[in-house]
Structure formats: C-alpha cells, structure tokens
Image 1: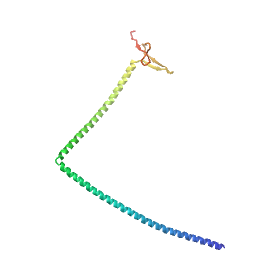
Image 2 (image 1 turned 60 degrees about the vertical axis):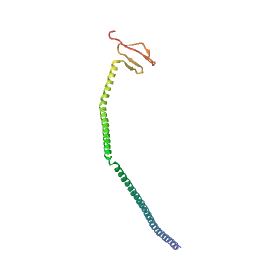
Image 3 (image 1 turned 180 degrees about the horizontal axis):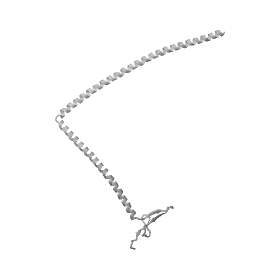
Image 4 (image 1 turned 30 degrees about the horizontal axis):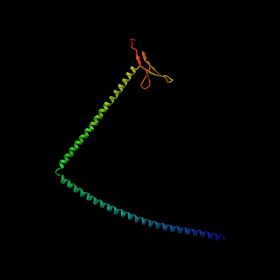
Length: 192
C-alpha cells in the first residue's frame, strides 16, 4: 500500500507539473498573440493619426497659401493705388515728414538739454544752500543763547528752576491769555 500510495503521489505530482507546463505554454501563446494584436492595433491607430494629421497640415498649408496670395494681391493693389495717387505729392509729403521729424528731434533734444542743465545746476546749488541754512541756524542759536542767559534746571525730585543772570529782576506775576502765569524780566543797567 505504501508503494501504491507513493506511486499515486508521484502520478499526481507529474499531472500537476504537466498541467502547470501546459498552462504556461498556453499563457505564453496567448501573450504572444495579444502582443501581436496590440502591436497591429497601435500601428493602425498611429497610421490613422499620421494620415489625419498630414491631411490637416496639408489643408492648413493650402489655406495659408491662399490667404498669402490674396493678401499680396491686396497689398499690390493698394501700392499701385497709392503710387498712382501720390506720384506728384510724394516729394512734398517726404519733405513735410522730414521737417516734422527734424522739429520733433530738436524739441526733444532741447527738453533733454534743459532737464540736464537744470538738474546739474540744482545739484550745484543745493549743497551750498543747505550749508548756508545750517550756518544761519547755528548763528541764530548762538544769538539766542547769548541774549538769553536763563538756564532751566531740574532737580532729582523733578522740580524745575530758572536761573537768571546776575542783575536781572523779576516783576510781579501776571496772567497770560492762555491761563499760564508770566513774569517780566528786567535787566538792571550798570549805572544803577
């Protein structure tokens, strides 16, 4: 029984191997057939696309040539019409255009030159003007400091004091228009 059981198993294995081999062969043939059909279909599709594209390109080129011919014919017709109408006035029109161009060029150059000169002049004048204004401001500050010998002091507690120059007297307080208190300062003359 053991020998017939092992024979039986070996037969089943052989049958399985044979079936597997047959399946692989059939699959291989089907894949080859599928590849050939796919190649044929793709080739036909590409051929159809190429022929359709070629037809479209040929039609577009024909339309472009027809349009070009019509446009050139219209341009030639317009040129002949213009030449016929302007043979006597061509020289005058050319001279007028040349004069107009010359006037425009001169005007543009004059504007450019004016802007250039004005910018250069402004750049020359501006630093000296700024320096003179700073000098004037410095002189005014010195005059104010020399004429006003009043010093404002603030102590560590935040109280403010005015130190007046020697020989200055203070009048009694009076009310200003805005509500603040004002004092008039008098300088004693040296002969007092």
